Image 1: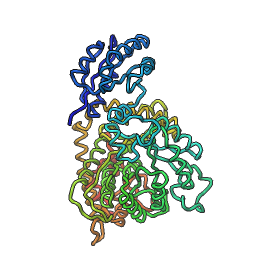
Image 2 (image 1 turned 120 degrees about the vertical axis):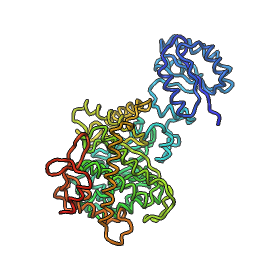
Image 3 (image 1 turned 180 degrees about the horizontal axis):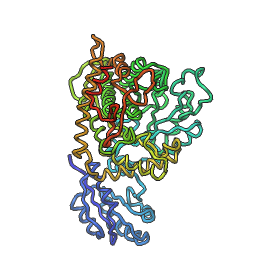
Amino acid sequence: MHKKVVVAAALGECVHVAGISNFLRLAEAAGWQTVFLGPAVPIERVLESARQENADMVGVSYRLTPETGERLLGQFAEAASELHEGGVRFVFGGTPPVAEKASRLGFFERIFDGSESPEEVLTFLKGQTGLDQSATNYPQSTMQRIYWKSPYPLLRHHFGLPTMEATLLGVVKIAEAKALDVISLGIDQDAQENFFHPERQDPRRTGAGGVPVRSPEDYRALYAASRRGNFPLLRTYSGTDDFIRLAEMYVETIHTAWCAIPLFWFNQMDGRGPWDLEGSIRQHQQVMAWYGKAGIPVELNEPHHWGMRDAPDVIFVVSAFLSAYNARRFGVRDYIAQLMFNSPPGLSDAMDLAKMLAVLEMISALTPGPSSEGRGGQGEAEFRIWRQTRSGLLSYPLNPAAARGHLAVSVYLQMALKPHIVHIVGHTEAHHAATAEDVIEASQIARRAIENAERGAPDMTCDPAVQRRKDELISEARITLEAIRALADSGVPDPWLDAASLAKAVTSGILDAPHLKNNPFARGQIRTNTIDGKCVAVDSNGHPMIESDRLASLRKE
């Protein structure tokens, strides 16, 4: 296939080429063949090169005095008129004052003044124009939007204030600022648990933890508020009761981007829902099957719940594998693997990265293989994994400047995994729920970190210490998974899918966390500590325990 050619240069006496270099890098990512002529290039040379290269597009830049630039660009437009009439496209980039002068000429197809996001430039280079106030120009499904925005990840952030009015206004601001690709509606606890049961709702809890949506019309209003700017996708919590009824409503009202649901949580064990542990596992499996049948992506927001409760890294990895395994077997085709860094907060960046690499390597084994029928009732030939990274909920410092620094550093580290989605956890997390202005600022911080990484970051995954820890975690996780398989009752065809066996993995202590002490569904007897940047199980003397020894100690009790 013939590649389109773009020739670019800084005109006249202008020697500033950083903007042009960035433009050409994006052009290469969009499939163009690029020809860079360098700084301070005469008009005649630019046009001569355009003819020689049979250019489809010519890009010129000027970043000096606006009045001088205006005269120079007028001369350029006059000299290039023949090429322009012949179908060659011309674009300009410069400072806002020079860009304003260039726009008066009516010659350039597109003028860039440096305020554009990389995805806007990419979109133009991919042939999509007119990105203003039209949902047709912004893909409205998760997978399409990922492909459209590549190589940049989608940006997502939670947002939900204690009143509908404030949340509606905030959604408008976020959409118009083009800050996010996905707004995750943070809804209050009553909306998650008692949406269809107003008799169970407590007026004193209204707005606790998010926006108090109380009717389908509320959701429709939130969706309507997002229909502007870059037309972000919407999604929300899958709830803790009446799961399928909620799913049907989400699809109908906000055209939910994807489902997010845990495997072991959001029930009586963590006080966030009415179901017991085993019953909730069955319910969650049914939700996966429903969304899988509907062709809607599914995320299991599972492993970080163990990490936030100080479970050892190996249990984080095991729960991540079980999540993907269940999603695949219950018919999910597009699986969003959530990878929350800094959980628990004391991990070193190197060991945190190793843990995520262990997760990805283990779940990647689920992608190939012949079609077969799972308990979800659908074949398993297709199972695509989409990487979603995020910073740790509990890892943010209270100091605002330090929190901004943490957000930038964490996102930069996450880019080592080449995520398809970056779930931004706002820098205000330790102090207050994010306002629209906070969300917009957080997205700007994250964008800069992502852009820096995309320009060429060192491959931190190659660190020998990271690779050793990854291999160690995979080996340990396999021991834990076999222990879960061994505790199942006879006749259970697949303990990793069986709700009773999975619940027993928790009640027996195979899956455990220190914060579960005195929990009626878990032991909470495990001790952990952060040693050399790793969260590991320790014995009563504080010495690290390998997984086989920890599991053996459970059998002795």
